[in-house]
Length: 163
Image 1 (cartoon, rainbow, N blue to C red):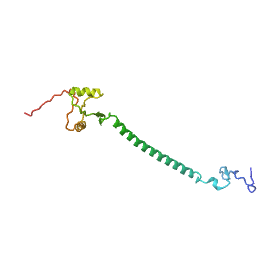
Image 2: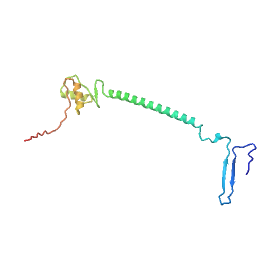
Image 3: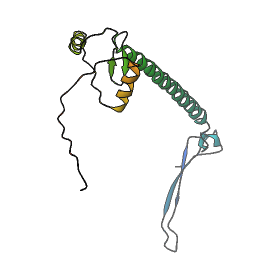
Image 4: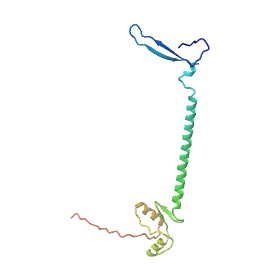
């Protein structure tokens, strides 16, 4: 197959050539050559892709910034809502400490009357379970008298002597 390359060129043609076996016993070689219209068709710099990569990076960065801002705003909103909810978990006039709500009544009643009043409100007299809670109750009392809940605790005190 032969092509006249000086006539009107067709740049998409492929050219083949054969090399015969050499006299010294070398092998025959066949190659195919592709002729392109211009060198721009085969450049390795892929300059047409670079603007696309820049656009993708810019879009990715913008999306990341948007998500970061949304996440930060969501965390702030969660904190605000948590503060509101924690403040509203206790009925009006009650004070929150830890996971419990406390009401310091101004009425003077006996222990039994105070306990009944608490039960009518859906609560009970305080049972102090930690030093922190004791400190809170003392501060809540401010030199006034209050009843606390009682529970039966059996304990044995052993005194040791070094005689």
